[in-house]
Image (tube, rainbow, N blue to C red):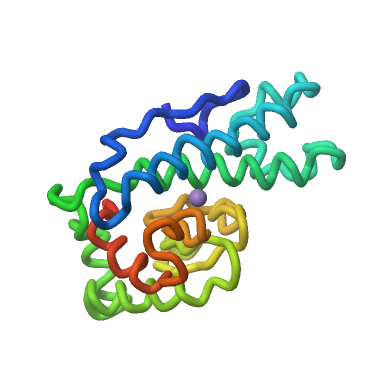
Length: 202
Ligand code: MN3
């Protein structure tokens, strides 16, 4: 079951590959910190915020994130921020794979849609990378299909999610510094360029 369909209490899903599997594109130490510490912290904080609210504990993560006003004001920001962090990271880690696997180029309907919208996969990569470099501070870059069925690259601040667009991410790249700083330092551009070797395209 996907994490977005789960309810309280949330637990850290194991990485579906080894911590070193994405080397040298994403280093082992970053994977340990990012998955075991950062992701775990969002999960802990979300559980902590939900602890006193039996009603919210019955709601799935997706329901929580799309029912902002149903969440008491006292914990709304905490649940939206940390729930968003859980949603985004659950997607992010699941949609990375070792560079050797043949899953890093779009196929089928997505390949056709990308070509139609951007001209070519490499033109799409350039557009997506450029947008990832334009995220000011912490956030994410995502590819979504909007409500009219068009592909769209969107930037998300902090732990906002694509659910704000009524969509699940097709592709989602973490551009918080914690995603790359240990290896790439301030070179987000190199991180984004190398991320294409390990990002999974459906
Ligand atoms: Mn992160």
